[in-house]
Length: 291
Length: 303
Image (cartoon, rainbow over all chains, first blue to last red; front, side):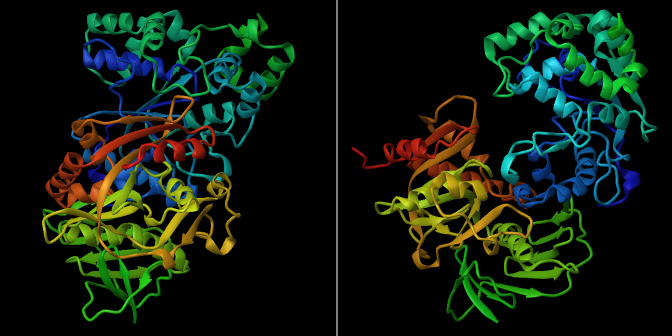
């Protein structure tokens, strides 16, 4: 790769553990940037970090021939190349990988093209319920993955390596949050899903200012109105949603906070709280639990 | 020096390639040798991507911990192996990338397709990696069909300006679980494509024929559909054109080397001449028997 100093800082990472508001925010961005009707199957954001298509096009390779560590070693260069070759001044890229180092000792998220990141966090008690629905699995399976220090998303059975997305190392739920919130070489804005629900306009306006997007109050209001949860749910009901896991009934499931009270057993709550209390406390989720 | 036939070309090589078909000829089209590759390609017309740079006559590709490859003028591949690299990996990336660059430099189009013989021609199975091309042709081979090519078919015009296809080389690449799906014995460790990859090679040198063939029909495979069962749909020529042009082999090369016009003209001719079907199958269960039944009942000449 050529001179690192010439790489434009234009990537805004939309980072989160799954089921934490990332897609809702991307729908909002699509409505805001597009100024038109929202089509949930044609989001205006620029793909996912783990995309095989982006990788193969940028490296002129068939990545199904690569080992996972080789893919992770090349990912920083893939996104330096994306930033250099795209003409637009901002790229919004969703990422569920934790912020980790590859086998070369380099962060998989490269510093040079990174403008900033928005990190979405949600009460893990609610994440467990939503994640189980997303995977078409049980809540216990979701908790097992969230508590696994070496948890992967989209890892294929039998060492196959052909899916649209590479396996994504997420660590545990706490590990994921910590990895994205420890003195990264670019600014990170943390948005709590619960705050996004409680005061959508204030939180989304803060995010728009953080990302330095020019938008009027009227445009923000319009984009929020277009991406109300019920509207997204309605659209999924009518046209389906390409990002839905084939094992789940629907992607936009409930979109509320605190519903874990009705879905989790006391033992399941204990398994999550015991494992993640430090991070839950830091982001104000233990107080909710105690009440 | 070894002499082979592959991708429609006579190849001289200082490296042994068990994958290719041994051949005898007077003049080689391509020479493969070990040497020192240039540090970088320069010039306004050079496109730089990740660890690969190219223009229409030169291609420089680096595969970390494996090898650097320099392809020039459609007739030379220089290989500089990395310390400790295994020979299988060095050969795999040469056959999949450097050879594609040779073809593009020669104005020949590699299509991402496997094929079997049918009647007096061949039937193509296109699709992205993982769509099920190799599994499909291997399952058909088990039913008595003869495999024409796996993964890549080379398109070109013959002396009568007819569009024909040439095979690549006599090796099928299969994931470990495909052997079980098709009902074959488990693969051997020695057949691995790379030491740590769960994908295996199956040679078919004895059945391999180097003659160009007319394409009788095309199936485009989608291996990750949302439905519960395999479904087939005949495409109009415009829809067929759109889908087929997404099945270019190494489309970054096609774009950076300015070969889009040649590719489009060939795909356009193909879709105007033969029927193109799209087959969607779910990726969450073994549907190979249903898939084969669906294909056979839609082959030309089926009653």
